[in-house]
Amino acid sequence: MFDDHDPRLPAPPHALALTTRILLILATGLILLITASIIAQVVARNVWNVGLPWAEEMARFAGVFAVYLTAPVLALRGQHVAVDVFTGLLPRVPRTACAILAELATLAIAVLTIWGGWLYLQRAWKFTTPALGVQNIWVFGPVMACLLLLAAISIWRVLAILRSPT
Picture 1 (cartoon, helix red, strand yellow):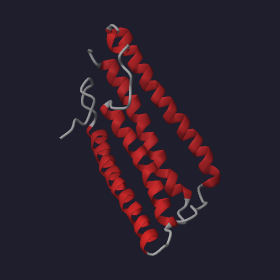
Picture 2 (cartoon, rainbow, N blue to C red):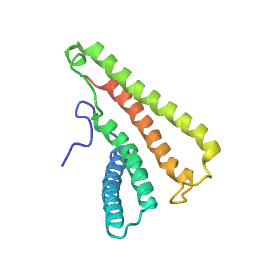
Picture 3 (cartoon, helix red, strand yellow):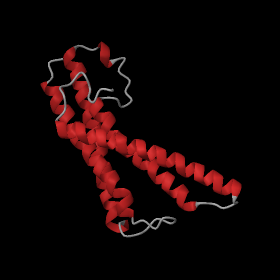
Picture 4 (cartoon, rainbow, N blue to C red):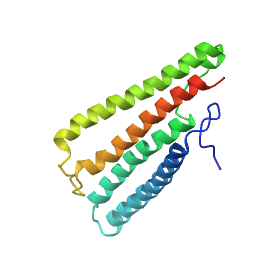
């Protein structure tokens, strides 16, 4: 099995660990859904000469959801892409400051995206998608929830870094 959290930090609260495991399972299911919808599109186009716009839209939304569902998972595990060649050579205090700054940057991005999404959804929540006819709130709501979780994990990581002896 894989580690559920960044080994440099204490174990996260059980609720965070459980939530990110569920998100990872959902994201894996979405990847399977993307694969199935692409196969369905290819078969429909090549066998029956029919396009499936709903399958294209579903695959696109599943891809977006998979990205946003895994962002909190990677944040909790400390597995977001990072270049730490320079910071790894720093003494403990500056290295800790850089780690906190990185987490605060993640928090700022999450908060700004939530704010922008909220402004957008105030006008567009009731409109529907072209092919599936799904209201935008059902498309952007889970994204906003994942960003809220990402913000909470960033706050937890800052507090964990401050409490960590290394």
